[in-house]
Amino acid sequence: MTLFGEFLRDDHRRTHKWYQYFPAYEAHLERFRNRHLTVFEIGVGEGGSLEQWRAYLGPYAVIVGIDINPACGQLAEEDIHIRIGRQEDTAFLARLLEEFGAPDIVIDDGSHLQPQLTATFDFLYPHVAKNGVYIVEDLHAAYWPNHGGGLRAPASFIEHAKRYIDEMHAEHFWYEEGQKRDGRTPLGDRTRSIHFYDSLVVMEVGEYRAKRHRLSGRVGNFRPDWVPGDPVPERPSAEAPAAAAPVIRPHHEQIAQLQRQVRTLQDEIAQVRASTSWRVTAPLRRIGRLLGR
Ligand SMILES: C[S@@+](CC[C@H](N)C(=O)[O-])C[C@H]1O[C@@H](n2cnc3c(N)ncnc32)[C@H](O)[C@@H]1O
View 1 (cartoon, rainbow, N blue to C red):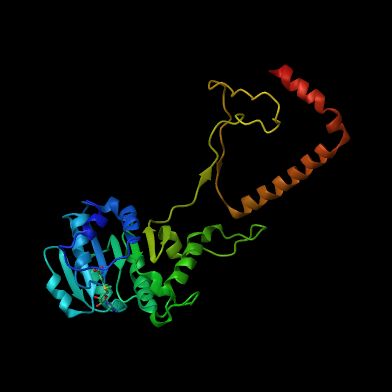
View 2: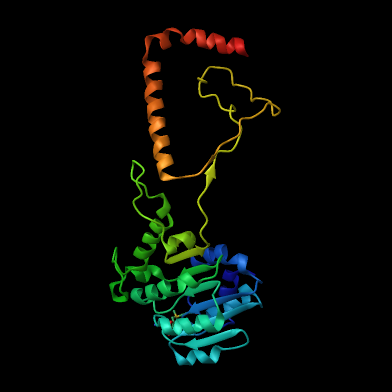
């Protein structure tokens, strides 16, 4: 059963969705199916989406529907809880967290008013469980002035989400000479990825890990002095001792120092290559390489 297949059936309660949401939902929610988890859905409407989440996520999902409309209370059933309140009311949201614990999935399909959904996000996002996901739906409203949005409008959630991209990269903000410009933020620290779809933003939650990278692979498998026309070099045998690849820990001063060293070496190489002796001895180097093989 796919979520889209479930949606296309007409024997459930009504729900209204843009088709492009379904591939995105399935991409981000598949891993939650048949797990014990808590879902907050903001905006219950007539209950069609509650039924879909139950059918798709399976029997262990505890689903909390949040709406201002008291009539939504009729949709409560086993492990589908309805709580009536305003999504921007942080005291109300705090009570939900107390009652149900940290949500694994938040889907905001509520008022679509930009200041309200941003207030909801600001309060709830820090409480989403590690490995959870926060989804904001119907973000075409972010471009509508009558919903508090507009193209590049400061209150638009799309504009907020663009800034979250910067926050996710905050640790990489360096001046050219290695001076730190900005620091990490709580949002950047716990955001593993941000996905933009037409009218949908999906944020995947992680927890901070020091960013690391290293060079891997054997030194000598690539000949920087090879030129087109030369025979393709053989790879060194696997038994030949390989120089250990250094572990590089990014540190802005260290990176700046390495950048300066690289520039100095590049200058030196350029000077050597421009020299007469380098050009005159080029045939000798080529013969030497051939003999070496
Ligand atoms: C688009 S409908 C939800 C549809 C439902 N998710 C579905 O797909 O079937 C939006 C719902 O948000 C509710 N709503 C509007 N403003 C709200 C607010 N400030 N807080 C909570 N719910 C709100 C409305 O009462 C309405 O039921």
